[in-house]
Image (cartoon, rainbow over all chains, first blue to last red; front, side):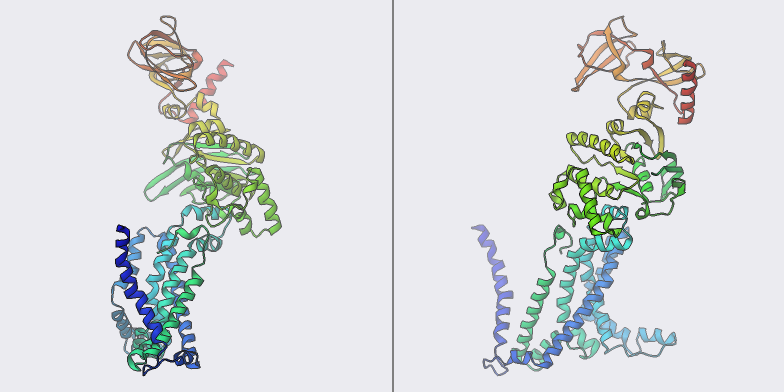
Length: 269
Length: 362
């Protein structure tokens, strides 16, 4: 009886903040801008304009995830070797305590025409570069913001791998590359998958960064939703894009949560 | 076949000296045990031969070829790790095949060799099992198979039996000895268990504080320990202070006893050791030393009997027959049973002295 009572707050929470918004969103997606039921939103989503936007969203999310992974994995291995692991980890986690917008504004300062990067570049004799409003800047800032989220699960996974296993692999004749590919990678795969999940999905729907850093030159699904709701006030279309974002999320989860034998214990957040 | 030579090997980690001037040759095909308490540097020697660490000073050579700087993956040496270090993401077959795979050996050959190794350790039916479905003893065998499938010249074993329960440990001792004989390769076995060392080895190296205190066949180490440390570490012992009166005569508590040791200056202070199983309880006044039985403890194969002599010193006796506490009795022993050790004497001087008077007898 007590157990059932304890379940009630959880149920209220789920209904109010998960089921209801989802239901509303799916519902809205079947209405047009003047409130008439329609399937036009779905038709529009499959038009070339939105299809391209979805593709480019996926492409940027893929790049952001890839670069976060390429930086975080070696970083996690390096931190694993250090004496004061928790200190180094904290240094990298620390920026997540700073507001996202503040960090983004800091980058505007650095990437601007008179910013730090250009000052250094011109001092070294390079031509002044247009960094802001470029997709490279967008990727750099996003990767910077997502690195801690990629790093943590990977670090947890690699930190759980016993040194003895690495010694054993070396003992059996494995080169350092073999150790990486045959022991470290497979044993830290769950951590890598978790990292991909928590970076790829949010980066599909990034929107403030796109506006501040790229001046809306890069339009992700997130930007599109924001514009539909706040600028065009076409809630139906915004909801439709939201529905597809959720479908994309489910797809990524399914792809990355394939069962691992034996290694399920390590690396789950 | 490989002879391994450690020459003046020192190892330092930060400010801590871990190995001090180790000098030893491991001959091909023999079973060596490095014995010592934890922290004495025994595992460090193993890691050095394995190629996981390199000496701060001195050389490690295989058949005369210096191996300093050559890493573990390029040595024909394999290790059975203390907690087995089996790969949890691979099954039994894949674990054993690991070393062959990284050497890019053909699939067929890998299959044949792994099957052979599995049969060798009696695990033929366990090929496809995941590691966490195996018992401790089975994991142990997989670890051995994983090492020997690479046909190493030397197998290093780092306390491989310490995680097993007593019965299994004894069984595995027999198996290890058997495997070593069949393969004919060098085994270097690290343990802190003196029984294991005595049962398995062709030669034992007793270590303490980063130094090899004494090396030799088990029987020599047991019968002729270099000093109090070795005597106490291997087997039980009664050790008392004494004085070498002259060759073949040692004084304990003012009484002189005939012995077979010599080669020392008269009146040299010595440690005198008698093994508990060499002491015999006889009737009062009929032995070499009168005692009173003080305690008795049943140990299974023998009774451990504590006796107090006239001067109040305690002697431990191992006997298959129990004795009555409070009973007045006497201890008897042969002159052969007295072993004289000179405090501070090093191994070379000790061996020299041993040879000098053993030749006299011959």
